[in-house]
Amino acid sequence: MTDITREMFDQYYFPMFTPPQFVLVKGKGSRLWDQEGKEYIDLSGGIAVNALGHCDDRLVETIREQAGKLWHVSNLMTNEPVISVAKQLVEETFADKVFFCNSGAEANEAALKLARRYALDKYGVEKDEIISFTQSFHGRTLFTVTVGGQHHYSDGFGPNPTAITHIPYNDIEILKNTISEKTCAVMLEPIQGEGGIIPADPEFLKQVRELCDKYHALLIFDEVQTGNARTGKLYAYMHYGVAPDILSTAKGLAGGFPIGAILATKEVASVFTPGVHGTTFGGNPLACAVANKVIEIIKQPDFLDGVNTRSKWFFERLNEINNKYQCFSEIRGKGLLIGAVLKSEYEGQSAKLLKAAIDHNLLVLVAGKNVVRFAPALNITKDEFDAGMQKFELAVEDFINSHNNK
Picture: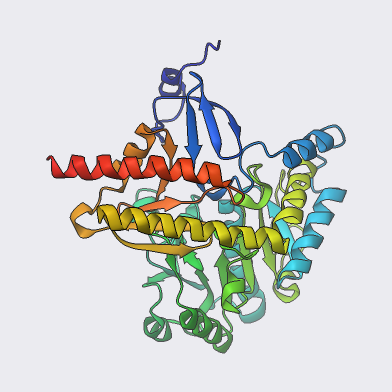
């Protein structure tokens, strides 16, 4: 028995979140249990974080082993796990150098600072414009929330950083008319996550790369959500054959243990000399040991094939449900980052469908007001998937009935 209650959250915590009226205490795989012993199926993956589900035995053992060796030494020294995971990331990607921090927001903050510093050192103070895209999301720091293309996240915190331009996503003609010699970087998500699970058009990404090269602007890919095998490749840029100059990663990188990173070419990374940027906890041995194990697992071809197999499960089953209930206009995404877009008659009601899912002991996500998002564990079992989809169909049925009975 515990003395902790859900009411205590409202009493003691900042009023920024409104979690359901239960407290989770245990997880295994894609199942969770609350204080009352009630079981839930988790198709949210901790918002694309729990890459290997809850309490994966391999990660538990890695944490236990590293916890008995070394937790933290600061960046005045180095350690074996940080070197090992940096080596893996360089060997598996376009990058030559890696910097570790603690979250996706920190990674994107570092990426933006790196781009500005590179432009200043190489071209001078006039080259400072950052181009981003409407409906994008890059984090909650003042810089990243301003670069993100959803103003309701940045309003009320001014004065905001300047020299940031937002244009429509997937529209190359507008980018052609916007980018200039003043542009220091173009930042985008290969698949917009919070904006509605919107994949980039391959030709659009190809031409963005060409325009960045033409105007000596850096291309930054925010792969905080799309990275770490989420889309069926280690990083989503690998689907497109277009490599960035800087890539941010976090979320699933350590399967639930907090860590973030930026990857970059040697040329770009060279401007982050001692004292220019830093972190106290980033690159600590405990986080890096877990990330090292996660990368070892998820980079394997068999594992990536498994992600793509599971993706087919979801697309097929969601389309079956939609054929029956006719509530979605589109099922889109890649790998295990999937969005079900509500039809116009249900516009703005994704949170209601999420609530209906919770009522059936199912955890899903939203991506804006019109999209239900799925970002489950990449190794979700068939039994867990079947149980989750059965619950989701019941939630959809309740949602439709509730709408029709207004």
